[in-house]
Every structure is written in structure tokens, then in C-alpha cells.
Length: 85
Image (cartoon, rainbow, N blue to C red; front, side, top):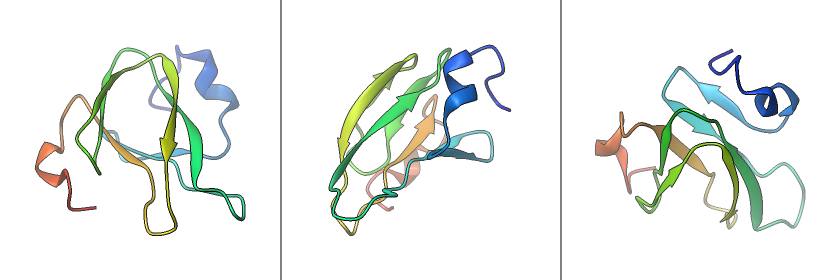
């Protein structure tokens, strides 16, 4: 609902927006420690675990060991959370 103009978002079933600024991409398959995450267009995305920034409109591969759920913030809105999640 946050990105109606980005058709790629229409197909996503295993990641979601938590409010308007947080993207959550949990591991949904057993024995996986990485996953592909699509970052919607028209935003800059920051990984809240390591602070790495990405341009939207692309898919990235992220490491996600058992204790990590991939979480990204949109346009650095929750930068104070980097390293806390």
C-alpha cells in the first residue's frame, strides 16, 4: 500500500512494511541464512543491523543468521535504531 506505483511490490508475499518507514523481510524457509530483499523505488533504504545504505528499486541479498531478521528503514527515518535491532 505504501508503493502503489512500484509494480514489483504487488508480487511480494514474504516481506512487509511496518508502518510507513520500516521494511521487514523475515526468513520464512527452514535452514536459510540469507535471503533476497526487494527495496521499493523512490526511497533510500538503510539496513538497521549494519547501517549500510541502498538505493530503492533493486533486490539485494542479505545475510540473516538465526538471530537476525532483516529490517530496513526508509529515507533514514529511524537512523537512531541502527545496531539496536
